[in-house]
Image (tube, rainbow, N blue to C red; front, side, top):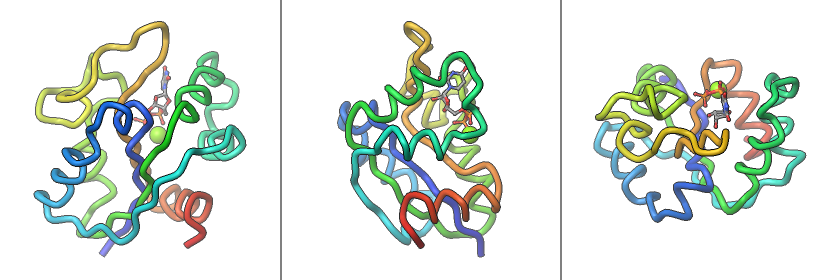
Length: 137
Ligand code: UDP
Ligand code: MG
């Protein structure tokens, strides 16, 4: 059994999409092990995305991710890390296929902000690091 870390990002919370995202998680059969609502600090986002710190979009990313409350949580289930990434779809909603969360709920970027509804850890190591950082578990 694997676990992963996920975020329902500020754009999705503001648009009232929390229920629809959670519904997809439950429909797929993954287990919600933890769920927390919070507004992230710039410091937390900078640590979370430290591997992107040198990217030109980093400041915009920090502004986006701190623009309002998020839902952060833990999912468990068989191969959940890859499965959740597949459910999310491509990073850029322009490339995300219909049927994925990003492909169903997000538009192409506007003014360089890739507001793409959800986050998911990309490896077991990232999941453990992110769960510790955000939830202390
Ligand atoms: N992002 C962005 N511009 C880019 C690439 C990424 O604003 O050119 C944002 C986007 O919100 C993305 C996040 O940075 O979800 C993290 O990027 P990553 O490459 O890790 O994509 P993800 O794992 O979220 O698909
Ligand atoms: Mg990533």
